[in-house]
Amino acid sequence: MCNAYNLRHRNEAILDIARAMQLLFADLPEFPPRHRIDIRGRGLILRPAGDGPLIWSWAQWSLIPPGTKEPPANPLNNARSDKLMGWPWKVVSRQRCLIPVSGFWEPEKPARAPGNAPWSYHSLKDGQPFFVAGLWSDAPDPSTGEIADSYTMVIGEANAAMQVHDRMPAILGTEAARRWLEPGPLPAELLVPYPAAEMQAWRAGDEVKSSRIEPHPGMAEPLDALLGLAMALSPAR
Image (cartoon, rainbow, N blue to C red; front, top):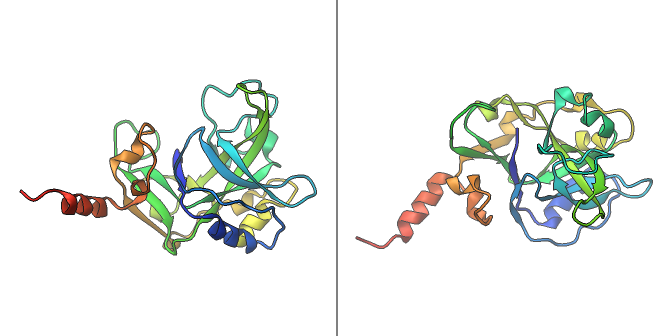
């Protein structure tokens, strides 16, 4: 499962991967990098909006199912690909979106295994952003009563790059991303492991584990590089 990711790329890089789908979409204004997006934080999604062009929306990362008056007690930030026909995913299976991502973190231990473990950061070898399959819903914000978007990230079978994990975010290539947004029944056949040879990973520092620490670029840097920088900046003894 995925409980933290980032969006370090600027809008032009994200627009480039969207243009490759050859679909109409709204403009994406400039925005500052999101160095860590946590559960129930705000992330960017690309979704249909009626018969018009696709729209970009800053939405809450934890789905609020349609008809729900209050957010669920347990966050709905991940939707397993093999359970999408169950509640609550089935009711939003036709409300599909794409989540632009620069990279994501995973603990170096099997899901739900007890104990603490280092975290690794995963991204594409070419350094480009990518789309992850998502489902979205609109619901009233309990604090304001206004209608706001929420979303969940689809997680599927892991590839060899994930090591100890059996699941990972469902990364979609250009053609799969275009098809994911087409109307109709959910195209489950698109949710296959992304090629491991096109991914890279490294161990990150422990700061990324704490939501109390203000997100910063170093959270996604290799741990050995951070240690080397710290030693270089430390006063001589």
